[in-house]
Length: 451
Ligand SMILES: Cc1ncc(COP(=O)(O)O)c(C=O)c1O
Image (tube, rainbow, N blue to C red; front, side, top):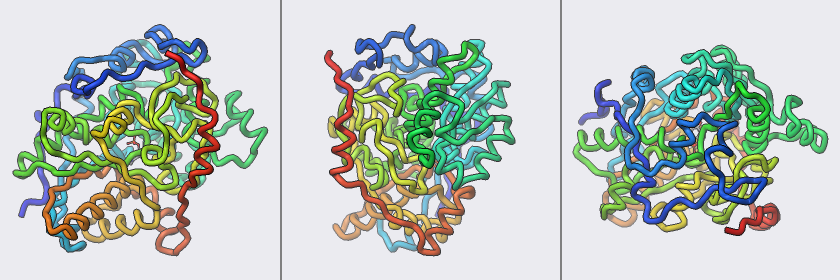
């Protein structure tokens, strides 16, 4: 009865997998917010180093991982794959459940997989400072750590509701040398304008992104870095699924269902896209993205061109969106409070290759507790959406009298989310389901794009 399936340092993937090579249709163009025309590399150059811009538009199937990045990956990779024997027993399922654990590093999540290459390419391009946003704080922590590896200054705009809920994340980022401000902040025009209208604004990832983009656009020494959504971020995260495929083979199983929680799409795509390669080649595997009912981008959003941020500073991409002015409820899975989604994930959802499900936070925390008490690991509230989806799929299989092999990504740990667990165990966690009317109201603001 083997529980852990482990790879050695030499089995860390040497190349990232680029899903674009296997998609039936090319990605939709990215539109300049000022001109309304497709963006070119020179439009993105003030924000990103050229190596990342090239990855953003790359079409080759595999992109080599630089030696310097592999060396740093070896500090936390390969990550373990577990067979969840005890969870299976606890929920009484006949199905087999596996999970890949990405919380085994100081950032607490998968985000370090892209923070390291982003910091590396910025350092190579001579940039000395990074401006970025963070929701729950895991991405900011990852960027702070990666920045410290390469001697980069890091400024983090942290969504205000999380800044209040998760003070230890701020302290973690500061320990690694980053400067952290609550967003909306007084440091940018965007932040000041929002605070003028609503001094108590909780903030959102959309606002924090606007602040970080504005900061980076004004300084030649500074790049902007995003922890999710963009193609190069998705690319870097595929190390998760590439390793998981090897580990599932070691275990002697191939998954019927691959699940990841979904905020901007990076950990979901990270585990699912390498399996999509098999699906595109005819294999029968379901890919399921699990999102919060309070921010139901994939299940209730529209597939349309929209801005990635609230202040309309970012390029316009075709994606599932709840509208760039959408203000999600202050739920505890802060990393899932984003109005948009990865254009690559969105396109594959739109084309029917990927499924999406939305869950309320009390049900999600219920599954998180079941998982914690059976498997021992305390999951992040975000990752708990994937746990919940796995439990539901296992129960559904039992009801249908079938046995499935289910793989999910445990994208991070919840050691710094204990206030959320405290709210849950003391009955203070409120379920928010976003109404159709609210969604329709903010969708009225979508930019007009004519191609
Ligand atoms: C642990 C964890 N999981 C998931 C997410 C959601 O991001 P993504 O959808 O890009 O994986 C976050 C974002 O902060 C996170 O911290």
